[in-house]
Image (cartoon, rainbow, N blue to C red; front, side):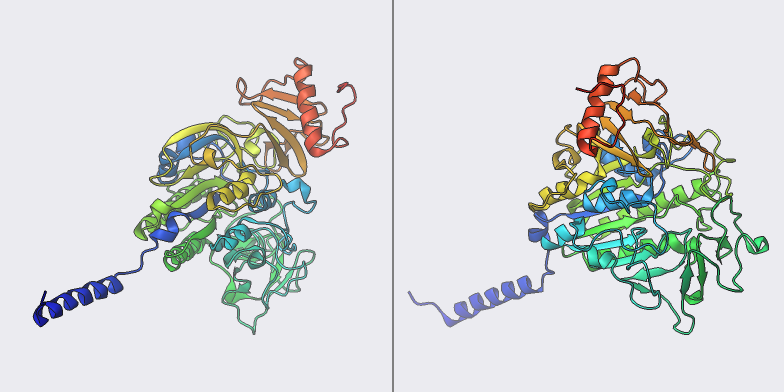
Length: 519
């Protein structure tokens, strides 16, 4: 059959046109991303179980947090590992109980890196699977070797334990140095005004909150009476670095912009983002847009500010076309506290709001409000909305994420609860050891056992019950979520059962069992 030259030319032109159109189409990340979902942890600081409207708050409305809660799985038995900050963050990233590391306590601003650089972490595991990893916001897991020169690159830090990118506070907002670090480098530092930090003694001529109250715009209550930055007294002494000082009211916006930039830069490859917000930790410094909005003083205002930040973050996730391929987990590091070092009307303007919800205790406490926190998993189009009573913990993230991405890594103490986090199972843990300032207790199914501890029953500085008692405490949370009826004497066999389980995990010498007659 004879084909005309004109037909051949026409056919060739069509092929060339189709080829050029294919080449000009923007590269889509769908093929790789279908099997490699992004993972985001949004981590709050001192947010109580009752601080969200989705968890029962009536005096505060948190619509953007509620979108996650009402569109994903809202866990009613979700736990941080500790009732204080640094231990919980350590456990989240490593999947290990914080009491296994004797240094996992509330860290000073000059503390060395808490995570060993040889230790398995979530970002390390995910990097092996091709993920880009980042931490933006609060770190509080120590930096360097304990003798930091803040005028040079600070190492080891987040980048040495698996994060490709880090943009963090040097310590906490109430501790010096009051500067941001990007990949270990203090941002905005003038080499002619070097930073000096000391947690033992002040630098000659430098004002302090204790000695110079006339310079303060926020009055200290306890502990926060050292160097003054932006009119706020801090923990620890600092000199120099004035160009690098953050502006407290801009902190939330600043971290939010960094997360938006990260999403835009990494939209075409799988990523893990640990977005650690500061709110509502002290000092509470809402941007002027949020001042007075809650009617509860700065604590309520910064919760509303955080809620707005989460809404803006999720909107950016949508705009970048990432929402349907991103698992978002929303939770916090420990329970609530009102006056935690500053006079800021948190107590006086609380009104009818109950930050702990129906729970007893709060930050620093072995009672439930110390470690039971808002805990939500959200994945648009994949996770169906619902509520789960399964017992889950942040130490389960590493093993669960490992399963999600096809890794075989497992953490020491975490379980693979991926199907539970995805809302496809109601199976949770049977046992969980809870911690508060090195003291530990056991959650077993719907029971709580707290061993005897010496010390005050109440931390009078923050007005929170600590859970200390001279005898064993046993509570049935199904019938007594507020932990008001101690059943230790009424149910000795159940107490013995829980003490035995606890000793199997913590060690036989941890608890004085005299009089229990354990088998």
